[in-house]
Length: 216
Image (cartoon, rainbow, N blue to C red; front, side):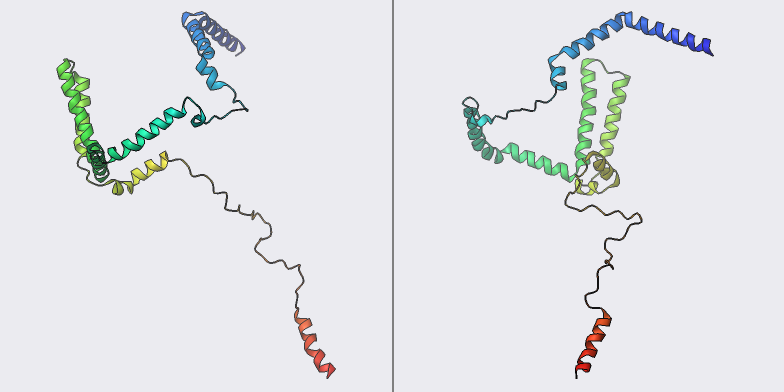
């Protein structure tokens, strides 16, 4: 057993030494040194500066005129763009996509498959792989166009709910809710404290009823 372990250790050391002295090992070390010495690596791994100075660019002499010019252009361009045909076409496309997202996606995949076939034929590179890929895209696109449900209906299906739940970020904890009290064998916090004296015990009530009779 000891001889086998010694032989394995020697073989491992020989392999590590050979890999270290090989051209591939030297190339790897040079690449690692170049990456560590690069400005981007040092910028990403640098410690944050505790004394960070925030400068408002609107208060500078050089950037403030540019920002004012952009604001003036956008204020005049956005209302005109909102009434243009491009904006109307974009709104129509968005409404059509929400009304039947699977149909729109299927048409896009179908067009991509047909375009792949046409480009391959024109370039003379149509082979078995590209033909199979184009056929797969065509089948997927035709199958998707048969789904006529809207996004609101698809949103309620189980696969889409699982996908959205997997992609959406977790909700932050609500700090306004008080933390629950531990109940591991301890006294219930909602129970009344029986150690406090009763302000009006029954015996005292009886005594107060008898005192007027004795006075009479």
